[in-house]
Image 1 (cartoon, rainbow, N blue to C red):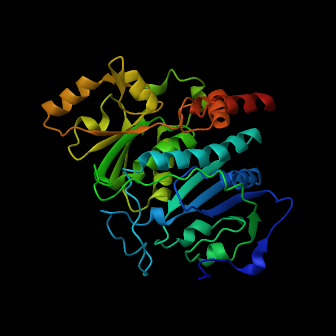
Image 2 (image 1 turned 90 degrees about the horizontal axis):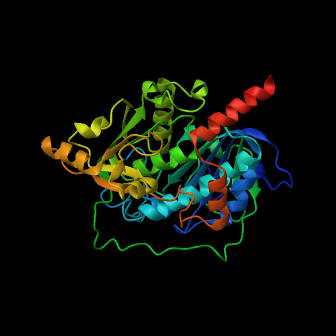
Length: 372
C-alpha cells in the first residue's frame, strides 16, 4: 500500500484546466464537524470535471468507531486510535455536513446540465481500511492542495492519476464544539431503524435521508419503497423508475455507504409498512416538513415524497394495541429550503431549484422533447 499521507508523487498534478472524465473520486480530510466552506471550490471543480459519477470521501478521526459500536476486525486498521463521536448526539452536525457537500456538488452538476450525474458522499474514520473497490472504475482522483489523509490508500486509488485542487479560505470555517460523551442522553446507535419514500431517480435528498438513517443504525435498516400502484397520480409517471429498479438503487447505495449493515428493502403499499408489525424497530427518520405538518395533528410516517399521512395518535395506538414499543424519531432538517442550517445562497438555490424526483422527471421529459 501507499503511504498514509501521500500518493504516488509521479501522479500528482495541479492543472490549470482539469479534463473531463466519466468517473472521479474526491478525497478530503476534516478536523471538525463545522461546515467545510473551504471544500467548496474543490467540490465545484470536481463536479465540473466529472460526467457520470463523483464519489466524495470525507476522512476524519471523528468518524472512527464510536462508543458502543461493534468492532469489525475486517474493516478496521490494527493500530490504536481515538474513539469517534456519538452518532445520535451529533445528528444535526453530520446532516448539516452532508447537506453542504451534496448541495455544492449537485448545484454545480445542475448548472452544467448534468442533472442525472451520480453523486455519493461517504464518511470514513481514520481507523478504517479503505476498500480496493472504492478506486475501481475511477478515472481520476481529486485531492485538496495541502491536505493530508492519514490512512493507507489501496493501489486501486494510489496508482491513479491525481489532480490537486485549491482549497478555499479556512479562516471563516465554522467549527463546532462536540457534545460531551460523559453523560449521553441516548445510545450512540439504534439496532434497527426504519424510513421510507418513493426514491425515484435517487438524488442527493434521498441520499442524505438514507445516509443519516444508516449513520445511527448499528445492525439493520428497513426501507419502505412506495409501490408503483400508489404512484399513479405522480407527474410524468411515464419516466418514473419501476419499483424493482428503485429498490435495488436504494440497496446499492446503502451497501456503499455502510456495508456492515443488514438491509431490508420492502415495497410500501400501506400506511404503516413494517412499523405496523415489527417489534424490533426502535427509531424512525422523519423530515422537518413532517413535524410542521404535525402541528395540525398529522405525521408523515414514511418520510419525504410518499404523501402517506396518518395521525400520530393512530400510529401510537396501533403499536400499543399490538404490544409494540414506541418509536424514537430523528428529524432531517437541513434539506428544507427554509432551514437555518444552510447559508443564504444555498437556501435560495434550494428554494428555486427543487431537489426532488419531480424536478428530475420534468428535466428528463424536456430533454426527450428536445430530441423530437
